[in-house]
Every structure is written in structure tokens, then in C-alpha cells.
Length: 253
Image 1 (cartoon, rainbow, N blue to C red):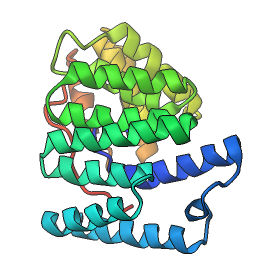
Image 2: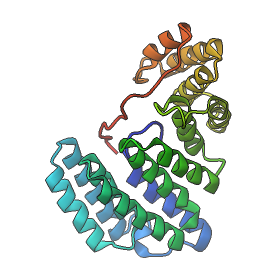
Image 3: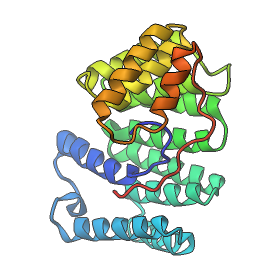
Image 4: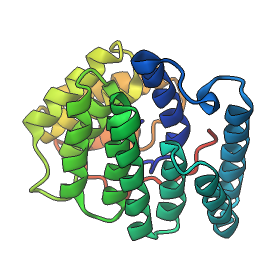
């Protein structure tokens, strides 16, 4: 996932990553992790219902539903990530951080190969809280668990390139991670190129930034590359981009 979209679609992706890691480490394990099982179908249905409630901004219903999810599956890390997602969207950040802590604890115990996803989730919450330094620390923790993960590289690069906090920004490191993300994703992902452009601008390479932003916009082919045109104008005027507010748009996943 790219940017700070606050766990949007994250719990779904986490469940897939946990399942894949579990298969690699010890087989399918619990029956609720098996595709097509009653437990898996129930989880997918509940997740879809929570998304509908969040899209409708019915936070009370979403919170009630996610609390039932946690009671039903207290050892399921993705249940806690769903809870964190709901609480963070309600700006109940202490509860959201607690939920992420539970997810991270369970991942350490059950599926260490997916641990980075827990750190990435908590990094998003810290960012929404305005704590860019803590967000950076968790993004670095996530990356250390899997340096070949394009999303982990991309998220850290974006933060290092665009944070309002000058103590967090680091143009040279941002370029390094953004290039890794671009290479790992095949070099044709507009969002990864968009991040690379932001990193190059922070590092002072405005010509390269403008070039890569144009390519990102061309690859997006009219799809929404949020703020891409604005960033291109900044780079053409030799200005770096600063992300002033995270994106809390509800995903359909």
C-alpha cells in the first residue's frame, strides 16, 4: 500500500499475507485460514460489512461489528488490525495503537514472516497522529523484516521525501528506497514512480523529478494519481512537495 491511506484495504491484505506466510512456515494451520472454509467466508463477510459501514461513516455500527470480530477471533491478527482501522478513522488513536500492539504481538507468536505488516499498520496511525518520527521508526522496522517488499520501501521513501518534519526528511535515503521500490515493482507502477519523483525533488534533482512525474502521469492513463499534476508543477518550478494531510478515503476492499 502507498501513502498514508490508514490501513485502507489493509486488514484484507494482511489476512492474505498471513495466510501465505503460514503456508510457507507450517502449512495451513487453523481451519479458518483455509480458502473456502466457513471461517474464511465468515471473516470475508464481516470485513465487507465493516467496509460498508465505514463508507457510510456509520462508525458506531463499525465499532460494534469489529468488537464482535475481536471477541469471535481474539487470536486473529487481522481482527485487531480491523479494530485499529476503525478506531483510527474515529480518531481514537490510543485504542488504535493498542489494537496494533495486539496484532504485532500475535504476528510475532504466530506468523513472524508477516510481522512487517503490523509495523506498517502502526506507522500509518502514528502518521495520522502527527508523529512522523514514530511513523518513520515503524516503517524502518517493517522494511527490516523484508527488504524485498516494494510497498515497505515505497512507504518509507514517501515519508522521507514529503514529511513536514525536517528532522524526518532525508532526500538521499528517500531516493535509495524509492529506486528499490520502483525496481521491485517492475518499473512501470505510476505510484512508485510518483514517489521516486518526490524523493528526487527532496534530494534537489528537479529535472529527474519532473521527468519521472511525467512518466507516472502517462502510465496512470487518466486514472487518479492524486495530486500528480500539482507535484509536476512544483518540480518544474524547482520546489519539493510536502504532504500536508494524509488521505483517509475509505477503500472498497
